[in-house]
Length: 434
Image (cartoon, rainbow, N blue to C red; front, side, top):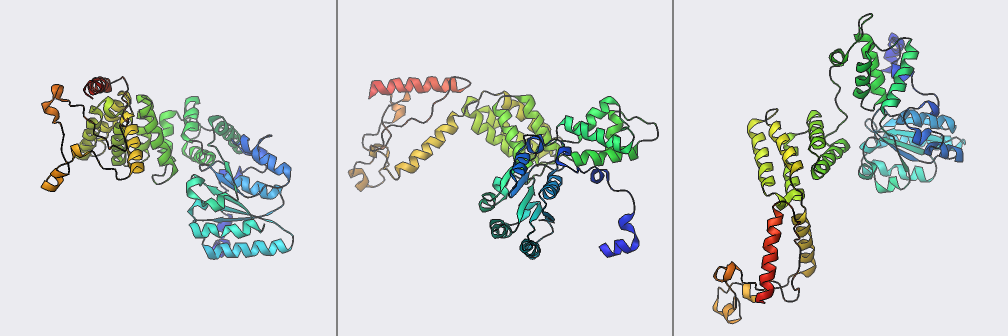
């Protein structure tokens, strides 16, 4: 294919993309990663020591992972090799390793940059281990996914994880200023539209430069785009979000914690972000039910009913009408009194049940369906609570070897305030009648 392009001259047609032309030529030009390449950055210190070692670059797209890997190879006088886990298999890895081994025999080192390394399976990841250990390659793997979940422990134990941060607004602004200087013309944006455009980039430097090229192409001579025109010119950039991977878990965690933290505005924001990114509303409905039972529980028994009703309403109406029912539920749960007392009690009871094993309940509360069981004392001495004063007998229901346990401790708020009053009353009666 490359020969076809060369023969036709297409490989030389047209200017290089702006993002490629602006690729940094030194670590000092890398935007937004001062914690790595600044004067006291982690990579700066490694370079000063004379050895960088293998590393995993973890961060969102457009933050400079590939660029930094190239610059490291240049500064350490290593041969730069690049492959993508999307298009490579074990045979490709073997070819790269053989080339690195041959260079090593000649006294030359190889920096192997693997893009999307998390897409390699366990066997493919294991293939890196021997060539990393014997120094055949210095591995730099790039991933947008959490390495703790996406990569083998054996691989992680041989590589340092370095985090690339999304570019902040100041870094994006500086990048755009450099682009304008290179192009010799300003972006055709009003001040307010420029601020919106910087936010629109969503921390992705490459996207900011690509979108800048689109703006210059879209604007008529002398035209200045306001915020509304900016939206029309760029249409809509999909949020950085993968329903199967890290963005999904980060946002659902944020939604759950903001509901738990009783902040309805923040909860609505994360709920809206997930819907906007294409999340399945049914997944959100299930998570709202979980929040109702885990973080509100019996402090407001209506919370679970409300969550179930919201899920059913969505099933009846579908999107987008049914999403309002889910939004109502988000607000209800965030503003409800909070209690995890039932959740804590359940976990404590489960722990004791597993540790206690198969202890037999007191015979007083066991049925006696046969004469033999009745003769053995099954059901003997059982007090029928409805026949007792206050419908409370106060008898002991615990296995003798275990003794009375205490799991549920309701807080003095919401509906559980009433439950606590009942429990305190029954405890007093139990002490009187025992």
